[in-house]
Structure formats: structure tokens, C-alpha cells
Length: 406
Image (tube, rainbow, N blue to C red):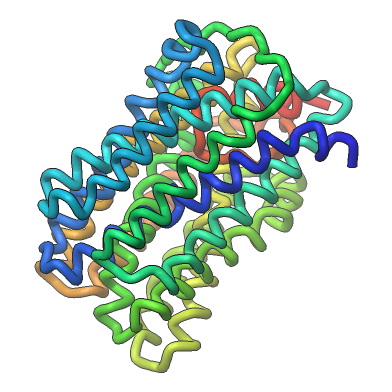
């Protein structure tokens, strides 16, 4: 309990930030639909967010080193709030894409500051509990953000204002905290190809995870509307996906520590293909069936990033774990940038089922590549499986000690 109290300001900032940032994509999708944006234009918004996110991951440590944690967090929070508030001032898909670059950059920047602060506050003795609390708050905020969409009116200034208020409110806990700012750590060197050098399968796995998550979060609402869900039901559809992914983390982690992680990745991809086919096949069987299919899809696809990251760390040395985490996140962002534009264009041309056909093909390719890599080299002694959020390049420092071999 003392640990949670000591980290309360940081965790409250994470919760408020996730409630704000987690609601932007679905609100943009529903608002764009209401305003007559084309599927390709909606896909551009999702890609723009991750382009800003990738830029923020690289730039944020340098800003933090120049002006300190609190000032950097204030600057990034203001950037995110401005990006949200400007939506209904300039209603244009290109302008919104620029705003989404701003919000993506802000999210990466804010999480970089928070995770750097957490790294300075926790010791190895309490790192596991601290990461557990962080995971719980982050996933809880993500789930709450999806449910928040059920009560926010699309294409409304008030709705974007509420998200902006939550973004700005995330500044208060850190601004009012009496804790001393930690010393600024050196920015991790970005070696984009390191993940593929250590494990080609892990590199491909995180790209597929990026393709899947970004496509579902941004284009999923278009699919949901296409199969007859109302805006309030679309929020539950997205929440079911997040909840399924949250429920899968512990059993998947246990399994990934017991057997060859490559088999886990292969079978997760096989189940993901089945989930895609099931989602399309049952789309006309009522709202409850669609919700259950979304939960099953999240259960199959959500853990892939963490399993792939753990597999990459099995082949890494302790001194390169921070850089490897940054490389994995870079590969994830590449997939996430490309996916919304591609899937939105496919949905516009071939209809809502094209979203899951694309995702199924990506996971089929991952399963086949995993089977090929099984013949390339034997498995290595395992690091401990650790849930790996896709938040900032700094997450590698938080996870470094937990990944050391037993």
C-alpha cells in the first residue's frame, strides 16, 4: 500500500492520460463517419497519430533532458490538449491528421516523462509490484476510454473538450506533487534494426501486432457501423476487444514461460486467423455475438507484442535491453502507421469484412514465418515473460531488471 501511495501522483496522471488518449481514435472515427469523411481519410487519421507517436518517442527524451521532467510533461500535455480542442474549429481530414500528429507526439512525450520518473522511483525489490500497478491502471484507463465513447456525441466540440480536459487534468497530479524530480537519464540510442538482428521472428511479430492494433482501433468503428452497431454499442465493441486482451495476458505469459515462445506466437496467430473468420462469419447474428467475437479477437491478438518482445529479449544481452525495447517499439509503430490507411482503403473498396481479411492474412504470414524460423535455430534459455506496453522508448528501462535471466 505504501508503494501505491508513493506512486499515486504518477498513476493518477497515467489514468487521466489514458482516458483522454484512448478515446481519441474511436471518437475521431465516429465523428469522421458523421461528417462524411471517406474510409481512406479516416485511415489517414490513425496513421498520423502513430507518425506523431514515433516522432515523440525519439524527441521526448531530448526535450526532457533540456528542460526537465515537469516542464517537458507540461509542454506535451499542452500539445495534446491543443490537438484535441482544435478538432471542431477546423473540420477537415487533412487538418485533423495534423492534429493527430500533435496528439500522438503528446502521448509519447507524456509517457516518456512518466516512465522515466517511475524508473527513478522504483527499486528492484518493488519493481514487480510497481509494474503490476502500472499495468492495472493503464489497462483500466484504456477500457474506461472505450466505454467513455458511449456517452460522447460524435462531431461535437463538447466531446473533444471533455477529452482535452482529461488530458490537461493529467498535468495536475505531477504539478502538485512534492516529490523531487529525478535526474534525467540519457536518451536510449535508436537502432531500428536491432530487433530483427536479435530475432527476425520477433521483429515481424511486433509489426503484425502494430498492423492489428492500429487497424482495429481506428477502422474497427467503421466495421462495427457497417454491421449495424449503434455508436453506444460501438464503444462496447471496442471495450470487449480491450477486455479480451487484458484477460489473455496472464495465461499467455504463463504459457510463454513454459514452452517455446515461437510455438506460442504461431498458435496465437492461428487463433487470430480463426477469430477473424469467426468475426466475419457471425457479423449478422446479433449484437451479443459481435461483442463476443471482438473479445475473442482481442484475446488472440493483444498478447502477441509481449510474447514477441520476450522472445527477442531471450537473444539479447543485459546492456542492450533498453535499445532493444526501443527497436521493438519502432517496428510496432511502423506497422501501426501503415495499417489504418491500408485497411481503411480496403474497407472503402470491398466492404467491412476486408478489415478482418487483411488482419487474417497478416497473422497467417506470421504463423508461416514462425514455422520457418523454428527450423533456423534452437530455442534459447528464457528471460522472464513481462507484459510490455507500447508507450515510450523509456519502457525498456522499467523492464530491464525484470527481464534478466533467473
